[in-house]
Length: 406
Image 1 (cartoon, rainbow, N blue to C red):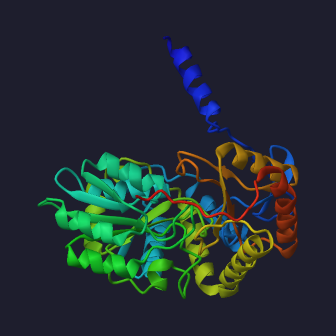
Image 2: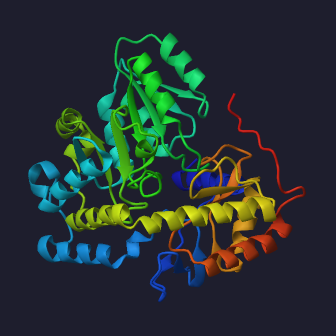
């Protein structure tokens, strides 16, 4: 078999399984809102992103980025350990630490990279890392590449987590890893229980707050704040790319842990630093998250109202969601693709999520809500779903789904 034939066969197999992916091009829309765009030339309302508060288009965030570009240019010019650590980096790291109620923080060009750095630096050969089955792919990839013994426990089955920690022989470090808000089902981890387990078994606890920041907590800093687990979580990782509306990632923890990452985290040491203007924009966005309480209140109210309509009026299965991530459970990949395509024809974009992002038989539409969505947006959304569902879903529509967590 030649190389070209190999690629052809692999791609054809993906297409046969309804897993083929391609890039869409988003273009400027004169509305000036993060929830409206031209997608492949078609005007649509976006219900598939993670800009939960619409801060990517906030005038103060944009102006902060522009001011920084005028001072520092568009790039950081070097790795942060060389001379790529600017005043904007320093001020953002201080602001993140204050926001997350930790001693220190360090920033990265992406959330994926911060997860890779955190886990691959904390654990290695002779150590044990245990994580929730539904954690984000970046956490799973980091565990596999770390060299540590890697075990998965069924989703939120904390009894099984205890069994693994109690019975697996290791003289090295033990690390528990969890999302706080799970990115596909939109449900929440129980951080208080996890904190008790980590204390009992002498483990470290790492929590990824990617989808919780800007959504939960009195100040909007995340589920760690919401569940009052600040003094129990050893390492918090997160992204600047979702509710913060910018781009990048971070690790927050004690000063000693952050110093350790600065000295030993290869993804930090050998990467050009995140651009300064993203740091300054993110700092302003965090300040807005804390001060603009009504934005967060609107997001949660929008989420509540849409979920209620989907379940009570449209009789759809939205799983265990407790966040602005609302899965519309479909089942078969082909049917999920048909549903998504039908909505796009109605001017509504919701992506179809298929294996390997989810388990076989659990394909879905991943609907996400923003504070920038208007009442008119939701009216169009619900009318489109009602129209398209009759063409794609069997009856009855509201189904019990097995989670396959044996």
